[in-house]
Length: 93
View 1 (cartoon, rainbow, N blue to C red):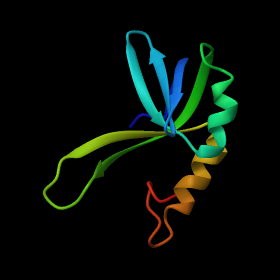
View 2 (cartoon, rainbow, N blue to C red):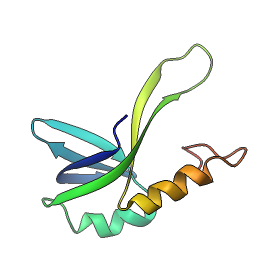
View 3 (spheres, one colour):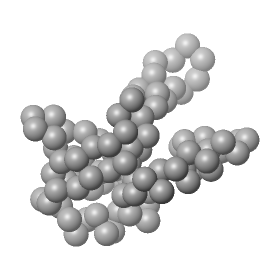
């Protein structure tokens, strides 16, 4: 599991941050509340505490790996607790 990601922030779009780590660029889903503060940090180093999961669209479909990034470990822990509520999944939260 990928639990932390550090690299250069190269873009923010549609609820995602694009983080370059060496020769790879990761798309990290981020909370809407973090988008504006992170937009001011494009081109700078960032660190995300991440949650890695597989997302599927329904039975028999393919699964896509997703990373959700948080600016603190506390935010990630809250998200993990919040998504244990029945009916609240990673996307809905």
